[in-house]
Length: 77
Image (cartoon, rainbow, N blue to C red; front, side):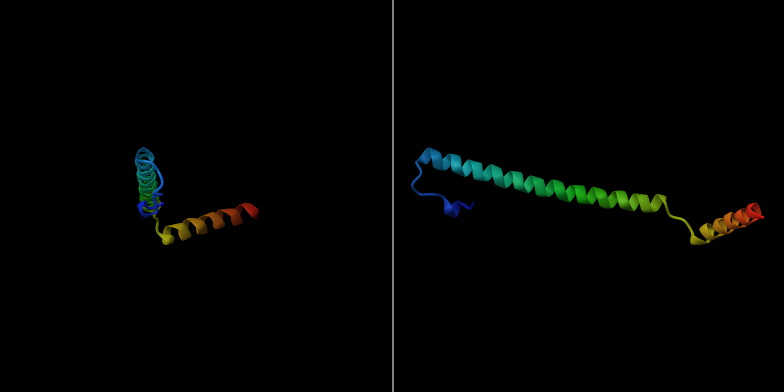
């Protein structure tokens, strides 16, 4: 709710309470959206770190795959 939609028939104390509740709801919404943004940043950092840790050359992988295939073919014979 916006403050422009504040019921005019409320007594002063109820209006003040109404406004405080709205303020707390806005702060909670802002806080949760900020927390979500921080979580997304953390996930991005984790993905980057994992990619850095798990990098490898495809040449190395192919060579070891070839070795494995040779060993398997020897075992089958």
